[in-house]
Length: 97
Image 1: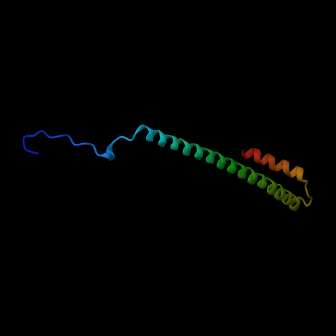
Image 2 (image 1 turned 180 degrees about the vertical axis):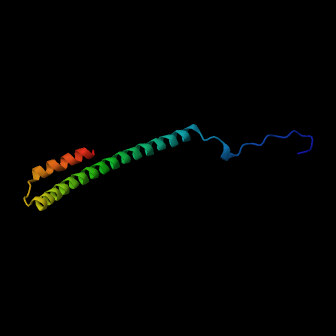
Image 3 (image 1 turned 135 degrees about the horizontal axis):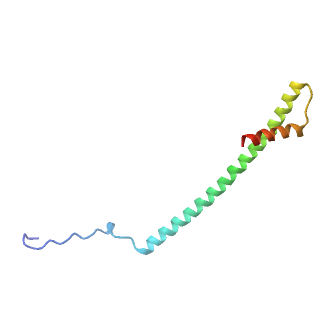
């Protein structure tokens, strides 16, 4: 270019052009599918965690009943039945909830 000729504005490179609408739509659909899959996997994981927690708490209750029975028998010399020990454990658990 000579000193007196007008300057042209630089053309945008192919990389800086906006992607076509169909490509944006495809990307948005893929993102929606991935989000849906992650939400389903998260919900399933939360159910498994809740089930494991409930199972563990159930096991703790059973162990606590056996410990209460053993402690009562050792302290009093007389065994107590599972129902009474269970009622005592349940009452203690309700107080902590």
